Image 1 (cartoon, one colour):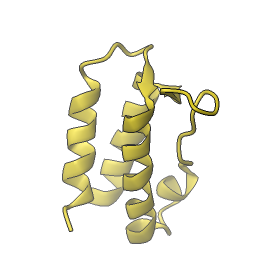
Image 2: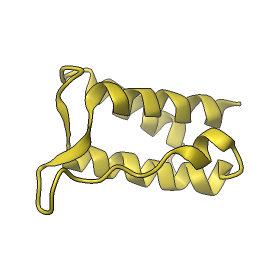
Image 3: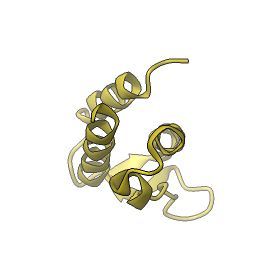
Image 4: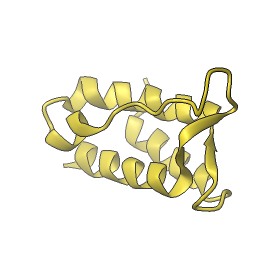
Length: 85
């Protein structure tokens, strides 16, 4: 199984192609949710990891997650820090 830290770093890199206020494409939100689930399995006792909720969609069938790129990048950074400690 790939290291979720590498995958989170790659997700963060992918997000640099978007503006900070842009809505996150739903498929990247789904990638984040899958990596968050792995992080919760690995470090669920960490209070930061436990505090992060999966991202949703702006509405049913939407092509966009209900989070801006800058916010998702901040969550990715927090997960990376928790997994590296």
